Image (cartoon, rainbow, N blue to C red; front, side, top):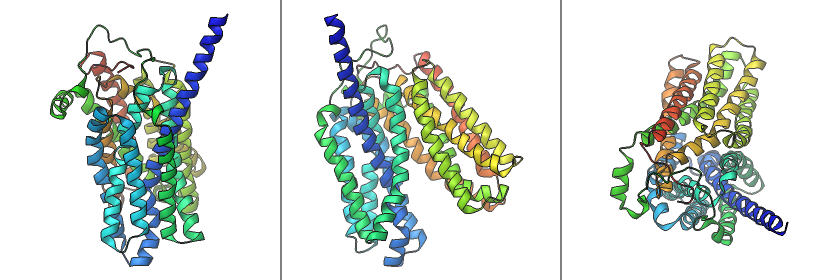
Length: 428
């Protein structure tokens, strides 16, 4: 009896520790998504202050994401070699500095510098976050960790317009930029206080996958060149990269063009269409929460990913055909968001399954850079469709992206089961 009580006490302590780690990482991830929208929320203020046109203002966001793309692909190597906790604090510190530079800017050069530094900061979060989650959170709570991670990112996006608009209204855009910097600085302080929670590896965790039959080389002990040579010949890695590229293209199509498409195809006004798009994002967040419970329901996470993305794609095809009433179309948009959100935790668990020992940060950094590639290509390509008069083109394109990603998830899982890319034990 005393032993049972002691075991229960230890389990409760481990659960509290897991959720502290999940909360810290979720807060940091929210900062990443929050800062992605800082420049767009300041466009009108910067245009009024300096007289810049939208081409020059848009270039600031382009610089931010281009730097983030290249940084994300490379930052994982650093994470695997020096540990994720200091890299996380570095990324948050870059956001703090970027916000200060925006607030004190005297021209375009300082704004470009702020965008570049912000992009450097943004580049570290996926390799850092997933390295900590995989190494520090107990297996039974991994699904909830992945779903919380995605949820907090969406909440970060949702917070930026409200936070920045409120400070601009109460004071001015420079105060708003300082406020963004201060908000991230507070999270940076929390991660410093919790540095012991985020450092090291949870040696008490049981392996999620039996890898005893196949000894693995620890890639973190190899040079960057050797690690790249090992990873870049793996079909599963390229499949995962393309998976993220296609899903981000689909999301970009929905985010950028759902409002005009709802107007053109269903005659829905801009305000109602904007509300519908917000509903998509909220439904996607709820789907991520639901998806966290599905992760533990089956070891074949690729099936959850494939089914949910196929459903999301099918709903977008129905929308694109234009044969449903406007009210029903709005509901379908939200349902498509929910289905796409359900796939996220299982998707992250799938990538965990195909990650070699000692390369968690590297693999997540490389495959997640596919998101930046998809996000940079989709707006232009789908915009050309609309300009050419293909009114429903972005919805069809998004559906194709989701369906291709569903197939890639199955192929990646098959590569892992054949041993093409050996899985990582949870203790690695």
